[in-house]
Length: 275
Image (cartoon, rainbow, N blue to C red; front, side, top):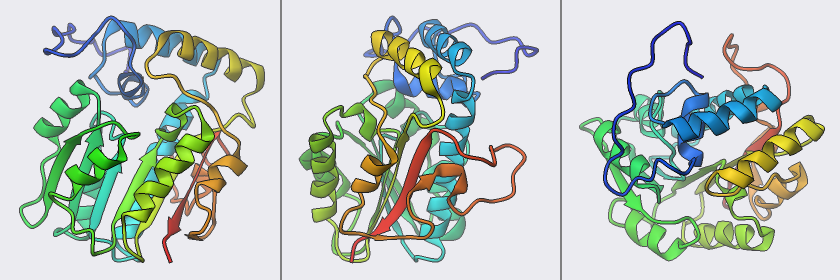
């Protein structure tokens, strides 16, 4: 969340196609991460949620740091040079292309989202290093054909690709449909490709988390379903899991950091390699 000691600039009029009367998931997470690309309705729901369940701030940060570590591993140790980031969210710091191109300047990254505000900010702010490429696809995760067709304009599907889906599969409330999306994406990429997935659980939160999620799903768009760690692990069936497997995200190859929770949070994820 933003520092209350620093005056917040007045909200700008939303750009064409952006509805600021309905709270939106990407803007709420942007607020929790300290961003300014959100509107009063987003902050209202975000504050209601965090008052009921304060650990959501730690969850938002932990998932973001997990992305950074996973991309750094993929671009470094795993040698991946192509990334398909689905459910991009609003730009903050250390976005996928920045992390990947810090390791490999020639890396190519495609961001996918269906929110017009996300895409507007992505095109303005997520600019590639000159040695690499960054591109954007306007598509819904469920429409894998559109996602893949758009990505194929930039990525070479004969070479390994890393697919990242953080905090996005929970928006597909039927597990079989969410799992089908993962399978269709994996079927389109070659051996040596990887997938990074993280989503919300409710092992530690209990009743306050349940009530906070009720408020979210009554007001925010799109809805979100918490899953068990076992269900999240099921998305990796048939893949070679990178150690330490599917765990609470601060425990996945942690870096010493004063900013990230050191223990478990209600968000589990992992990295898997396609044989």
